[in-house]
Length: 125
Image (cartoon, rainbow, N blue to C red; front, top):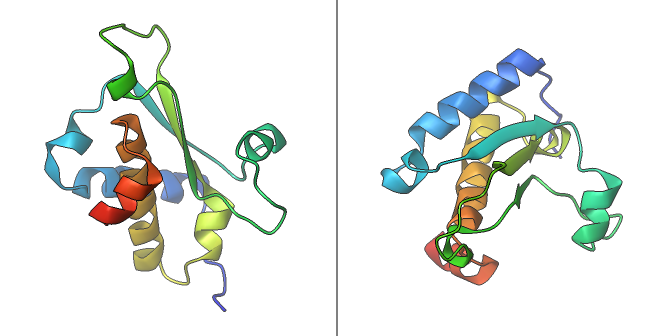
């Protein structure tokens, strides 16, 4: 069992920024109109929408219309990728491990932005 690493909001945001900059390929660099945010925990509404059980956790969430489903339409409001700080921190006992978990979660949620489903994402991983 890991002991949760404790960092402040500024440090967590810095890890997100670093992880985003380290993601490979043009796909990560070409996302447009996507807000990348973080919250401590998923909201009850997010958990309900995803039908999560009480013992399930969520590290990140993409909310929006995937590019593959837009059919040329432009959205006025940005899509959202939200990283959940406490679940991510609870998995990591070092800053290096936390940054890797953040990077992996970002990659996963960006894949949803491009329209990939969980089966395809797991194939690529």
